[in-house]
Image (cartoon, rainbow over all chains, first blue to last red; front, side, top):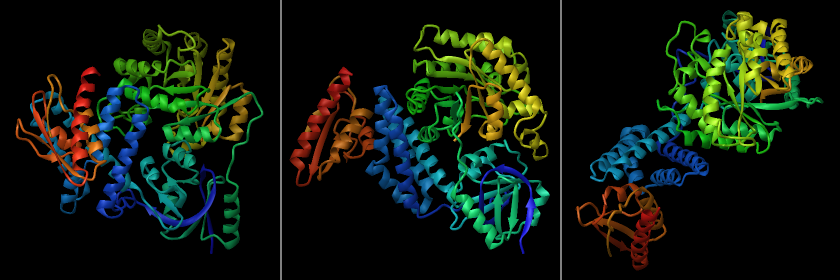
Length: 501
Length: 91
């Protein structure tokens, strides 16, 4: 007998799968290492080599390129590999890798020549690369049949670790439509229905669930005709209509792969590159070097050779720390040291990042400053930008703009616009701050469904202020990806919508 | 075949990587030994082993090969080593 559970829409789509209960305490998704140790090692070496190959292709400096060449040679060094294999059964893959690289590291450190001793650092680097590749391998969770994940709490990284082709849907408590995990599910094309925690108790493991993320309902033990309907709808997945409007539809991306995929899907540029995502898996507490950053930005920008590419400066905060840029513990991270506030506490880091972007010497590139609240922050940032880019003239000088995601900034848009080339409105935070509604709290998340009239008014004020100076405004955020909201935004005169693709 | 590392040069990462790649192209087992400090002989295909020779200026490096293409391998590696070190200086 089928029964219907009513929740709220999270991510669209309709699919059927077997219920898998995810208990974060029991780490049910932590899969055991897959496969034989030697197979894991081989695939980790291959992945590390591919990463280095990609890096090498984008490094212009011959010195750095040759160090990468040296590291790649290490990955196929027969003596090194023989030593790893000799202890792999006794120690396990990770410890065997560490042991072998330690051994040769110590050997190099025993040499007199300082240049040769320095190469021990490359061995450490290669060790970390292999270990990272192994971890990625370990985190992959595979299922043999389509499953629906029932979770009271789910981290974006946990979702990302699951093979999306076998993930029919997610029933989720403790999240709203603009929670990061839900945004990720939408990007992966996985339907999500949001519930209150209590509602999830009525679902048992291995029950068949039909997840309708568009209507926000779940059918437990659906009938044959309901399943048929779901598979039919699966046949023509949601596709975005092409807007007949002088409107630029750009992509929100957080990696080179996403940029490539957005280009393949016809995006008219990048509306928001989350630059911190490019370096998020760095375990180093040192920020990426200017050369590393330039290479990474160039790779992304090259995906769109003739279209605008917007690079948002590192946007970290209390709730999403970076290993090299952390605000520390705060009582209320959403209202604490984040965005430009954190960058201004590390002006050297911000200068380095702007320098790395300026090295592309390309007017298509737009520098975007996150979470600006008032004119003081804007002017201090602008001063750093000007000191780096002052020598550049069109067409080599990047554009400078700020995110409007704090109501104070929207209210003062006519003042801020005097000092920037463009605005980008971030609706997720703008809605959260305007409506005093935590974007991760399911109870209040419904305010953020579509856009509240109060938020639309702020957007309208922002657009009018920018257009009065002949400057463009883009909107990024979950809302921009919804047709009904997009129509409203176009009505308000927004020039560009940046959406996850 | 013995090669003396010229003044001001070191067998470091870049030439070692090139040498190891080259050694991989021959069927022979090729070894290098630093006669000056006694390190080695080591497998020429192993870049980390080549570095561990600590072959700095003035060191005498012995290249030995065993296999059907041993003569060609020895000559090629000795020639390449000199050339690579030469290139390092001008780089």
